[in-house]
Every structure is written in C-alpha cells, then in structure tokens.
Image 1: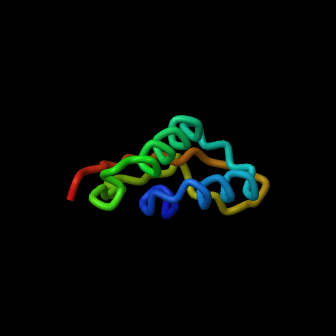
Image 2: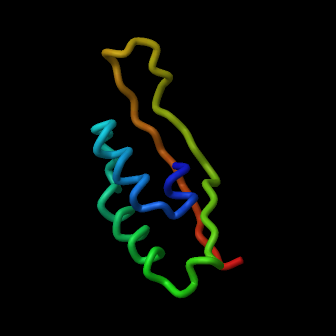
Length: 76
C-alpha cells in the first residue's frame, strides 16, 4: 500500500516479486502506477487509502485471509 500511495512502480513490482502476494488487482495497479509515472501531473497527484479490512486475522502462518482496500487519487 505504501508503494501505491507513493506512486512507486518499482517498489510495488519488487514487493510482488519478493512476496509472491496474489493481489487480485495487481495488473491494473501496475498500469495505474505506470500511467502516473509518465504523467505530467505526477507531482500534483496524491493517493490515499480510505478503507482497509481483512476477512479474518491470520494467527497461523499456514492459514490465509483476504484483504480489501480502497483508495482515492486526486490532484492536490
């Protein structure tokens, strides 16, 4: 989420590759971050996460859960 808020494509890519995290929207997020990286508005854009929730807290490393996050991007 930090990489997305910072509009950092390389950091997001590194996280996905190293964690093998199966973020459902990772490909649209890659496109989103690449568009921002090449935008003349890059310095004016801000992204904030406004909601985060999990299907359940994971207490055992062999278990998993689903996380949900929503964000907004706006011109500052």
